[in-house]
Image (cartoon, rainbow, N blue to C red; front, side):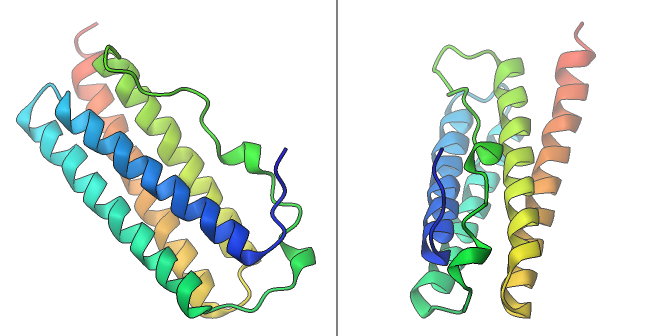
Length: 151
């Protein structure tokens, strides 16, 4: 299992996760069932681009000061989703995967906020956690509306 040895490692991981989310939502937008969901997926891709930009700025401007011992025990497996999207994925499966990704992102940012070395980073990570929880709720509502009602 990967261990983080620095704040830069954590930020690089989070930035990579955000890029994965951008790619994921762009792919879902291409295969969306309705124009509304296409817009939602495109909007989420845009929001994830914004998250990536915020994290990149923190890293580039080095807006932190954290000792190595404080980050070495962050368990990376807690934030990974092993299922990968595929072109033939059903709409139901895409929504489930999106919910799982958002839940993992929420957990990552919540945990990072607890380890944040200063108020600014704590606020950043809490803000990102809240945004990810809103995304998850949107997918849960979509799942309820289009999957559960169809069955």
